[in-house]
Image 1 (tube, rainbow, N blue to C red):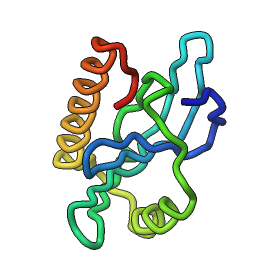
Image 2 (image 1 turned 90 degrees about the vertical axis):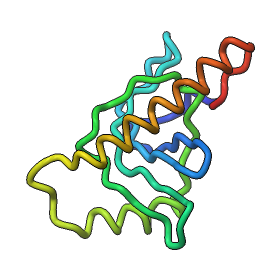
Image 3 (image 1 turned 135 degrees about the vertical axis):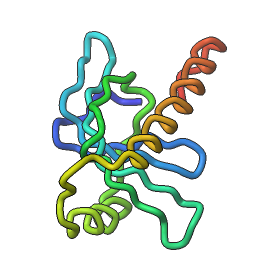
Image 4 (image 1 turned 180 degrees about the horizontal axis):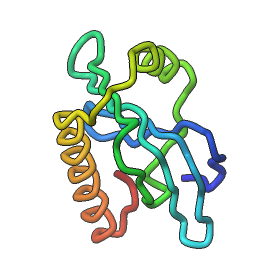
Length: 121
């Protein structure tokens, strides 16, 4: 994947029927890493998709090649669902659990791919 991501750009980390949309904070070109701030975790197993607010989740510093640029058309309607709601007063433990499970699954796939010489999730 490209190292051409810009701060503020929305990227997607895709796995199975779920996507994590995140905002690029910085690209560390020398190490080919991307620092992102999670925004949404979207599950496409239902219609309409299940959107979980991830703005309270921890930032990630992950290999840039596992992200793809998110299209405006796929993100705008999803973001509007979350931004229209009142901010939470305390973190959602179910959302945190979903986030950690998703991240764990992605990392397992990535490590297996690197072990076989592949570099995509």
